[in-house]
Length: 123
Image 1 (cartoon, one colour):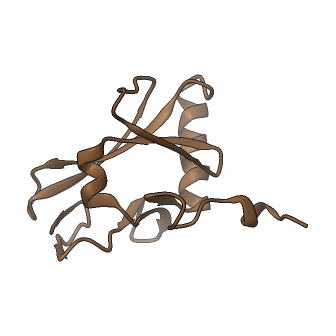
Image 2 (spheres, rainbow, N blue to C red; image 1 turned 90 degrees about the vertical axis):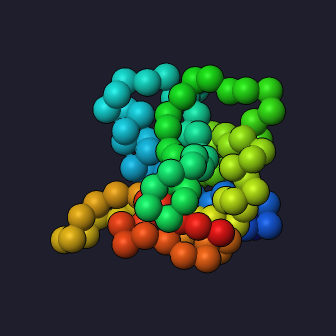
Image 3 (cartoon, rainbow, N blue to C red; image 1 turned 180 degrees about the vertical axis):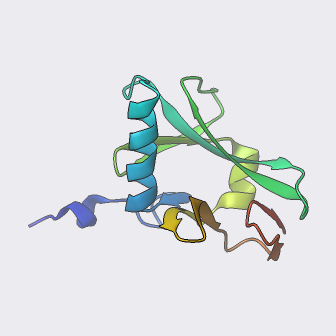
């Protein structure tokens, strides 16, 4: 018998992993912003900048480039450009709602260092 967790992508299936908590928060944001859940995708990427050299990028978009990698995790369509995948392969995106704050948290095995706030990293 196949369970829901058996069918979910793992680190070997998908270059970027969303936890269930992150997927739930993304669905909430899509609903709150009244976006079309069938058309919108979560863009995960990196850009130059931040105190450690690179900053993480999360964006809800309907625009997909031909070169983007696309995969689905917990019902969320995720896209990532090939250059960002070089830095994000194996990264887990989680969502935490704690006393000290709430937000998305990146667990990047490729990062050699990161800033105190966790929004930028270096390789």
